[in-house]
Amino acid sequence: MNKKNVISAVCALISAWALLRYASDVAEGVRIGLQNCAGLLIPSLFPFMILAAIVGATHAGQGLSYGLSYLLHPLTGLPKQISAAFFMSFLGGFPVGAQMLSRQLENGEIDEQTASRALCCCVNAGPSFLIGTVGAMLNPTAGILLLAAQVLSSLCIAAIQFHGCKNAPDLPAFQPKQNILVESVRGAAAGMFGICAFVTAFSALAALLRASGLLFIVCNFLGYFFPALGESFFHAAVNGVLEVTNGCIAAAPLPHGFLLIAFLVSFSSLSIIFQIKSCFSRPIPFGRFYGSRLLHGLFTTSFAFLGQRLFPQALQASAVWGKPVLSAHPNTVVSTVCLIAMCTILFFTPSKNRNCL
Image (cartoon, rainbow, N blue to C red; front, side):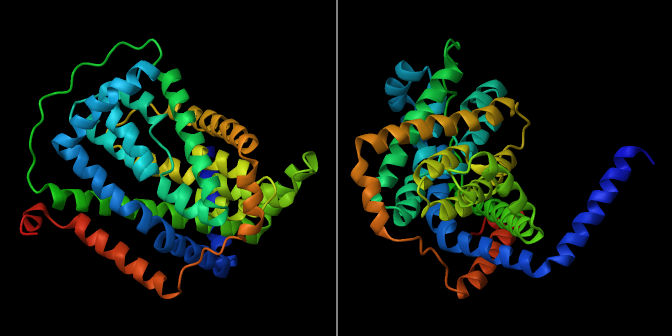
């Protein structure tokens, strides 16, 4: 038995012991993750994921790509093949742009390098999350500022990634597909199932870190070097790096919460990064994407800071707007489990049986 096997076995035993030792805390983290899925993510993401799948499977995708390319290509050098995915990434939220890029890669519309570059600027939080969810925690004006900051940040990332690149070839002739609505709903359901699984898993991981005291140690260590920010700031930051929704909820009432949220929604969290990787059945280079997350977050934070200085009344209003009250009714946990189960059944239904849908 080599050294790696021994280390892996020891880590597995420690993980199993921790899950048994803090079983009630982990279960509470799972419940919180399911509540976030039912109360925030599924209502805001699922309809747009269906829409994005329909756009990609119809002439609308090519129409958007050609139309938007007249504006985006001169500004950033973004190939016209990517324009629709870039636009839908803002409209639908984090996984939508990646799903469209994956579909284009499978259809031969783009290659692996183009998909790798485009992924850096096509993973964004949608307006339903920034204005509807974060705006409810701060105020609608702050949500609009965050959306504008993220759009500007993504344009900068696109310009960096595609500066000096050769023009991509024209889009191939569109091939009509059958059962567009059925396949779009099925694909969106499968994607939603993956999103909820990762959100729940990382919510459970955050709960385990809190219960074991490791989160407190890390936050206390960081707070020692940056005492002005406080332990609560780093608690929200670490939670946001793991899972963006929990991080934004924790950051909303903090003095510097607006800027921390600006960073988190563009960094997008480890949970989102794993979700994005799961969208691609064909391997692509992910090195650029990993590096772009930090740069994207810094750009968005900088633009949000400028917006804060230009519109200080937005954050002044947030002080009296109230603390976040996002919560799901206890029954929604059962509803979420049922929805995830139905998505799983739909995903694994044999194709010959789906034709009758």
